Length: 478
Image (cartoon, rainbow, N blue to C red):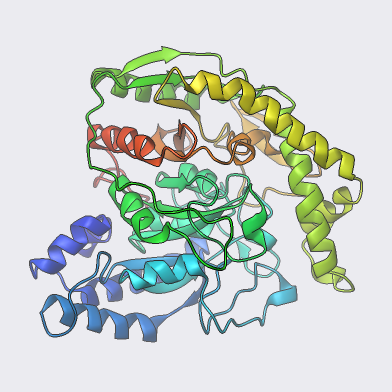
């Protein structure tokens, strides 16, 4: 069996192969580590490898499937990418910053620990921009992470390294975090699935857990793997007062007959590239072909929603970073300095306004969702975003022309942030195809507040109907 094939298998298929003895966890973990090291020079997606612990745990997993030790757990022997932002015991957590380049943790974040408790094996940490500030992935500390589908462009951010790991077959599942789209943006740009759960669904580490824009969540090449990860990571944690009880287990039903879908090719005044819209329309037809009732709708979300969300993030995040970087400003990336500079202009009145916009927005969008099971729109508005985009590198390509974002960071290239503001809505980013530059395109599948399972049902029904996802003809050529 070629490792080119099984490295792109889902966790579910790998586990079936482990149980039937067709593959061994040790064999697969060795191949994943080898693949990651081979593509590092091309994509620069990894900050640290865990060879020793990974191989030790792979041997334990192998013995489990041989009946020599414990009963195999739900993710036993499955390779996991740990986003560099997460704490993992005895590993470095620099947050992509020279300020913390030597910080080594003596604990593991609850989100990662729950995946480890399920039997997954951490094999490396993946790159982020400094303090996860960008929708691209580069920093002065770790350099530029590139998209394996076209290395001129970004794999998205801030979970860009995790997206690359999945797209290149370097791991089976990956961790991400999302405060403005940082799971969904790279999932879209790398052609994989990424899930922003409702706020509180997955517990987080204080104090970020009290920011209702903030979410930890799964990334994978398969919706079934996303669902499996969520079954392990959700549920109350006694250090996170915002954490929620586990939801009802997903029943596995992906029959889309008579499922009601409202969709739009725009949102909040965003401009969306023509090829993204075309691929979205093709994907909408996939749903209608399976019997879903599909209707084009005007989402009605206000154009100032994006500015308000940006103000919220800048005010809170920027103020926090200003304190962290005090007397160390010379170590910061240029975009971080600019972010802090802009944050100083924000006031408490601005924050109050942001929450007023959030209330007004959901007062319109909530009733719209009452008419549908899910709402669908694009994930990213642009595919031609250079890998080093972010102040002072402001140019990007839109429908073949060169444009510039503003200096403070422009979220208008991604349609994700409004759903961080409406944070109780579950959102899946799902691939829709490719643009002519080779970069994948994607859509967001948005459910009613806390209705994870309907999003899972619709996403799984869609995945089962698209034959091209990571087949031999649709993998990055590296």
